[in-house]
Length: 209
Ligand SMILES: O=P(O)(O)OC[C@H]1O[C@H](OP(=O)(O)OP(=O)(O)O)[C@H](O)[C@@H]1O
Ligand SMILES: O=c1cc[nH]c(=O)[nH]1
Ligand SMILES: [Mg+2]
Image 1 (cartoon, rainbow, N blue to C red):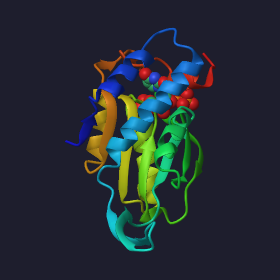
Image 2 (image 1 turned 180 degrees about the horizontal axis):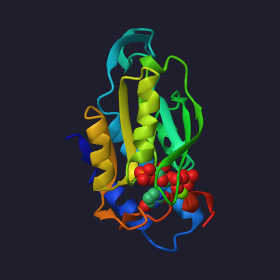
Image 3 (image 1 turned 180 degrees about the vertical axis):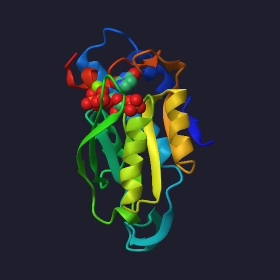
Image 4 (image 1 turned 60 degrees about the vertical axis):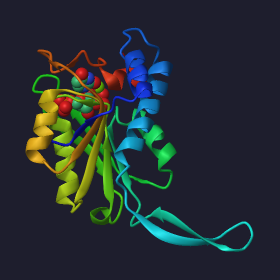
């Protein structure tokens, strides 16, 4: 089972702040970006390197290493995934951004697609899919389906908070996909919200509460 719940003290401290009921939009946005950045650090620890020789300060060659292969594509799921994007691209500034627009129908809890634009050569890139909330997992699996249909083989998921139901759904469909999260929470409530969770992450990030 490849779920990585990151217990780093900074992640746990910031997650605790994010869970405060009356946090301002500004603080929620800042913290979501900061936790996304720390989770990205963990999620990228297995990236492949290649040897690369450079000219050093005194004109002597230095053997260094650099990231190998095509640049990563980051895939925010609209809207709420945008709240994590800057945190991720702070660490991977040359990443290509692919965007998937989905909203979850409030009655059926099914994902409804409304936009998709992928980086070119997606089949050669590692995709880091970002969304604050993994609840039923419907939105995440729909996004992974879109990427896999386009030939993307190497995908990882970064979410701020995950419900056990969503983790199971992703793992059943994509056992090879690693999930990085600040917390595996207890359960979903009767409306499909994660408990204890963060509430409606999209509304909090966009100030549309
Ligand atoms: O795992 P699921 O049950 O599919 O639920 C999770 C999805 O719900 C939220 O998005 P929402 O539909 O609220 O859209 P928004 O980001 O535009 O607010 C969240 O950001 C995920 O994308
Ligand atoms: O808890 C949840 C579940 C879905 N979407 C959210 O924003 N929060
Ligand atoms: Mg929402």
